[in-house]
Length: 376
Image (cartoon, rainbow, N blue to C red; front, side, top):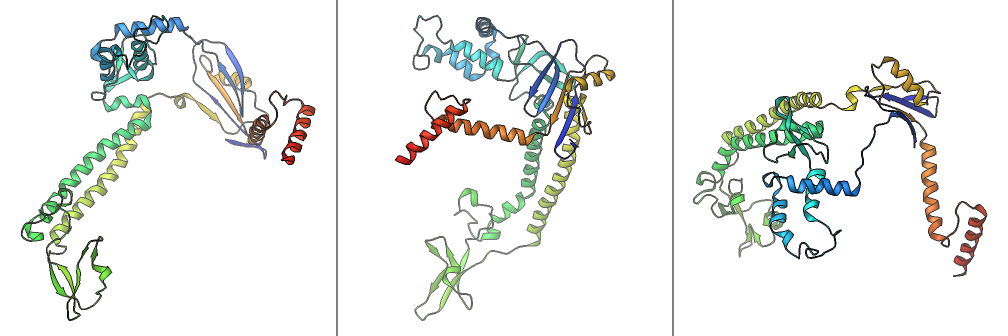
């Protein structure tokens, strides 16, 4: 954004050319927009019902979700799930149509035949009547995730790679795990008296009682709340338990350093790979930022989007799709928001039916409210 004087700033952007369409002018809070009008096709309730009925009949059961298969095969016939099962009302809810709507409008679907390069599937718009199917939770390739944006693809790519990194790091540490649960570390029996999840850790249960010479406070040798490694003889001598396990050894340290080095190098390489992957995802998925421009130093009085549109169309082969001018009017917007808040509070305090646009009536009702409040 570019500074306009001391109090105002504006930006203007133009999208790529688009075919046909009339231009419409709209005013919004904090921005003005000039756009080519794209006709919207809205279905009536009857048409929507007919489309959903066709979906419900045409959908192959093999392509439906497991939940929908269970509902249509079993639950729709049960009154506890379908209370209006026996109703003769022609307008009663149809659960098969509802599930068809859920799978064809709410859930993501892809075109069955149209596939882009490298096995990247083309995502269909909600309610698409062409031949589509749900994205498979198992068979959908990672390259298809760019249909949801660069961030989604990068996230799942990171999860997959980090899982492999942690698996390899665990395998590198496996010799240490086997050593710490063996008799070589913990004496006869190893760590068999520990829980399964604690076996292979550095916990040592092989101990002996020795006389304590210094630092013999009982609180230093308490384990939890029920077991002590501290005792006092009849003659006042203090005894504590000392572990007999071997301390840190070079071999175990080298395995730990190896796992740490592998993790460090892997994260560095992952960061490099993700940057490359992000570029690849971005190139596969075309967004408005790929064919938009931004003017950061507009003239102080250049806030008419129609004039900007005419200016940009000099350099466009077809036409400019949309132009948006953002205006620095935060103070005005804040004042309008606060006005709405105060009007809502007045509406709750004053008698129902008070005309808030009538200053005299509002003043009279406010005075009456104050008198009533102070009399209580």
